[in-house]
Image (cartoon, rainbow, N blue to C red):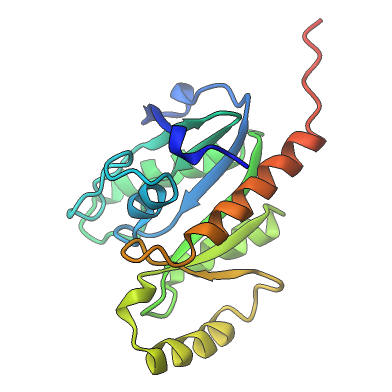
Length: 206
């Protein structure tokens, strides 16, 4: 099992040349602005301020790397915030696409979707990209504590329909407030890292 409690911030990359070497398995967190990526990372690591939580959507404009023993957590810039300039949106899109296309050791992508609302067009586009590119991924349904039991049941049924074009994906209701889903997400991460490490062949340096 990975030692999430030993996580440390490593660096923030605003441009592709700033990405660190991909020497360890990488767990990627993707989602729209303000969906709760930083809160999820903090909860997984039982830390209050490992990842900076901002009340200003669109503030994370870098790919942030967090080092665990034997793995990296990778927080991508949030997408879909309307008040960000078109130029900045293009920069983020190029940064994210460049990250995924650069042959890194991506063991698992955790796609975050606010459980209370239907997935956005950007969410659906990201899920389709991950599926078509054969990345291993799960969906974390954030802010599950905001729903009453009947609302939650209804949303789970709706989500099955809203994401019906994506086959075989696992959904994990998650709350950074009460910790629901944290243990399950940690299990997914640990298994993905273990599998990636068992398959990985170091590059011949001769």
